Length: 225
Image (cartoon, rainbow, N blue to C red; front, side, top):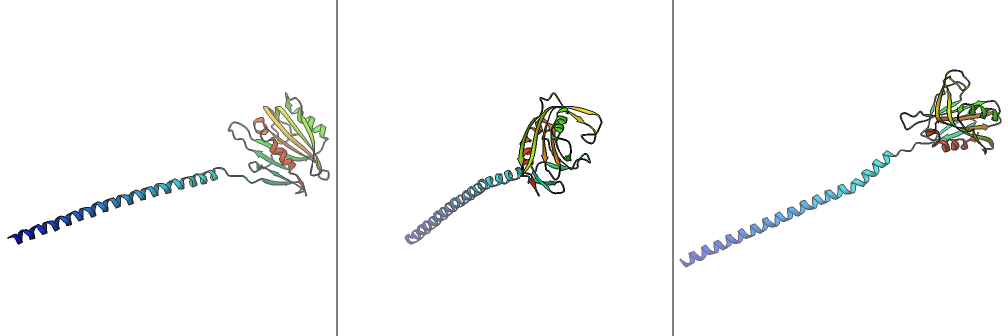
């Protein structure tokens, strides 16, 4: 009888030990799984945080494209110039013009600036006086002379109400429209062999004034071939 009781007690102890061991294994397994899941979430969050600056840098690079400078020639490719890439070469409105550029406006209700280029005769003072006559309310033309690539260049600046001719050229007749607060930046290049070249940048003062230095830089980029 004692033997049977001892055997029963032994089996009970063994069963209890196995139950405790199984419980301990289950608890340890659960804790380990939670730790792995937590590490995985942290790693994902870290990856997303590190990738974010790269995405921002890529967006910034796309938002700031740079336009390549525009090169063009006049006088049968004997005079070369460089203009800002954001300006556009367009078909001249008149046959007497050799080339024409458009300086785009950034405002919908403001006209684009217009740069015309042509070879013409007449003395420098006569042409400057004629340009002054196209502006009402002007205080007169500001002029300065400079040597560029061995050639004499006359820079002219006039502001006022521009009497815009609606004809096909500067010497054509037709209706005139008064355009207030307009400006002209011009340059007359005495090329010698190729005659005098006239560059006129006309438009609203809000377009011409901020692009005035770029216009002068274009003239100063002149190279004689």
